[in-house]
Image (cartoon, rainbow, N blue to C red):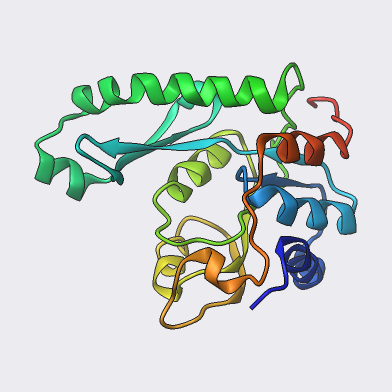
Length: 216
């Protein structure tokens, strides 16, 4: 059990030391991933940016992801084919469901980043960070978006996750760093002594501590 997200980030930063060689960028999934990622970026003196991703819920069962979107304007989509087929949803139907979700993604980008330019990932190592992974529904879209932005290498770094869920990502990323894989896996927050909700202001403050870098 981790004391809090800051401590988890510090432990991850230590574990990442031997894996970093060359230019790298730390990418946090907001909101809970930001305080974890900030500790990694601070310890290794790396730029910090966000990877925004949203789940597209199945109508009537919104907690079940039929797809997820990420990237600029939600351009990168990963469809849960099993759920889509069972629900009889084709790509056109999913695209219609995605319209309000893309609008929310743009709203959050404006809220968190304003006119702050994204950090270029071209040819760099991208370290994607969250405070834990329960189902992994949105992480596939986040990874695809990072690949599409030209990252040369992707490291998935999380304090805690289910071992079965991590196995889903082994073919999609170059390295996985996870401090704990408890069994049975409970909710992410169950593995922290202090796990308060991270608000929008905390996300903006976390980013503000890291000056934007030129998009080169």
